[in-house]
Length: 209
Image 1 (cartoon, rainbow, N blue to C red):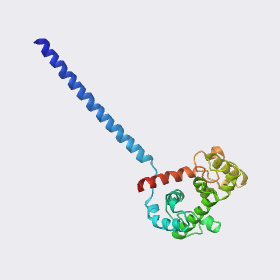
Image 2: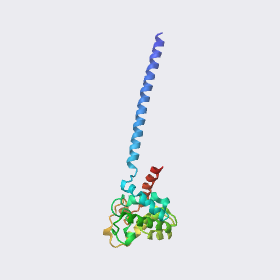
Image 3: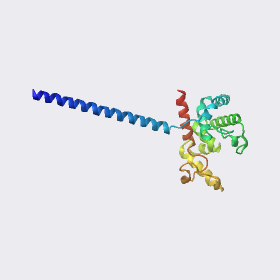
Image 4: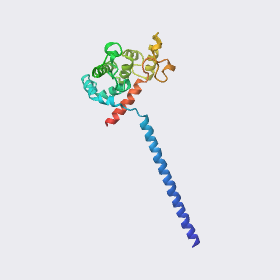
């Protein structure tokens, strides 16, 4: 009888320990999941409300210039260029008049920016990443790529930036804001422009699903 009672007590203790450790495991799993979710949300690129409000205008001109399928990419470009703020949200002045800050109308900025992207995509023979980087570097980057690798790569973007930076005698005007660009002597434009724009595009596409 005593042996049976000890056996029952042992089973009860084992059951209690099992339930206790199971509870601890579930709590730790929940906390880990919550932390992972918070980290993911904090690192994911955010789209500003200013960019979102321009979606109808971007759609209008994207369809007009035959790049309706790239609307999310164009919004990503706007996000990277200005976050949708200011009178020239697409930062399209230089492609429009050859100098900065000549556009003071957001709709004109979007029309010109979309037109320029459409032209870049056409000259890039449909290479979307090449067209996106050329929005930042200028159309000369397309010729540079076609004479070398034939298509966009991160390496050719760095090489072009280095070449343009080296050729310019006035290096004081370069701020080299992109992390790592100064160490590479690649201060012309944004060498990681495509990566940034694609990050915004992915967020916009995910939200639309």
